[in-house]
Image 1: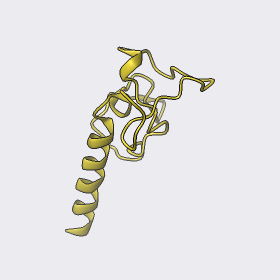
Image 2: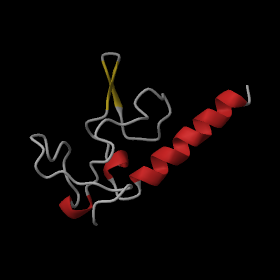
Image 3: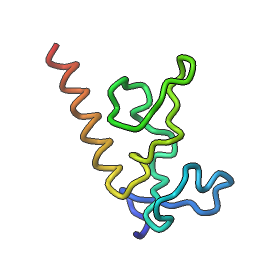
Length: 84
């Protein structure tokens, strides 16, 4: 995939890859820090590590469709708060 507003891969980053890779060509660095981290139900593969959310095994934001997934989830959360 090419770099765009939905996808960016920074192979020069000191931490690349920050997770175990399924496919280096499809690894998306756009959300280096996941905007869903503070959501309890983020839909990702996280673990509780002594009360701290551990996302080291999660690839949701790094998959090619991560941009769309994250934006959809943020819109859903916004709508939930607005409808309370």
